[in-house]
Image 1: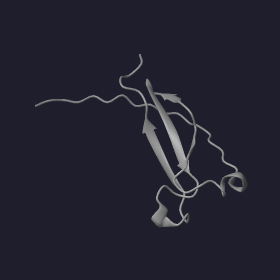
Image 2 (image 1 turned 60 degrees about the horizontal axis):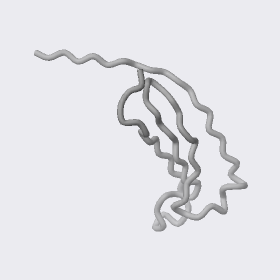
Image 3 (image 1 turned 60 degrees about the vertical axis):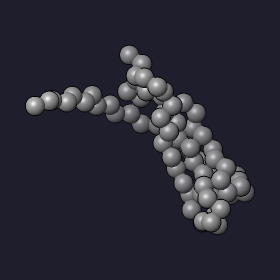
Image 4 (image 1 turned 45 degrees about the vertical axis):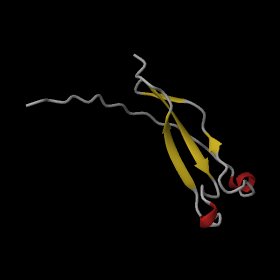
Length: 74
């Protein structure tokens, strides 16, 4: 039997958008949080204020958590 160990990490990140300024952003274009360091990894939040896909007609907000680093930074 094989045991697995997982490290846990807790963090907060405040990412503010002014929707008056972003409501004219083209569908499929995003605003990025820039790099966020958490648990030895770099991540970023990409927010598509009018959605990522044209077929959604700009009616949805899409948020993606991206993993930017290859290996943990200890």
